[in-house]
Amino acid sequence: QVQLVESGGGLVQPGGSLRLSCKASRSIFMGGWHRQVPGKEREMVAQMANAGNSNYADSVKGRFTASRDIATNTLYLEMNSLKPEDTAVYFCYVYDDSLRDYWGQGIQVTVSS
Image (cartoon, rainbow, N blue to C red; front, side):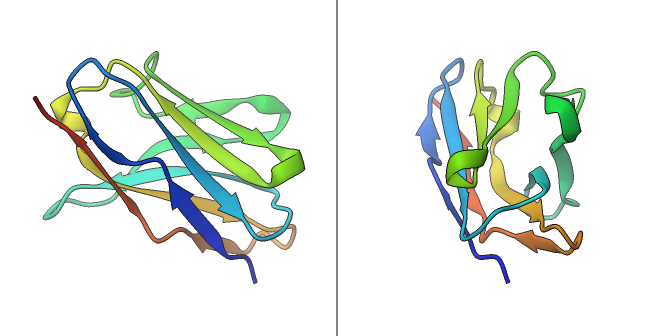
């Protein structure tokens, strides 16, 4: 089992920045971030792959950066130039070395003036 604890969400003005963290209880293989707006399907935001590469949704390319700290088993999502349409509940997910997936509890990000 892997427990995930997300932090770093909140309210920010348009154009601002936030960094989400997702700390895993043990070592992980890879992971990423999704987000969901009420009444809409959950969408992929960032998908981390080996060798430090990541795939991003077109809507966040150039503004969001996903990273991982192997030493602390923590994923990060750096979000810059935030827009009101980025408002959503953000979920981190990870795969363990058996490729079983685990999801965080979700954290609210609200972009509003």
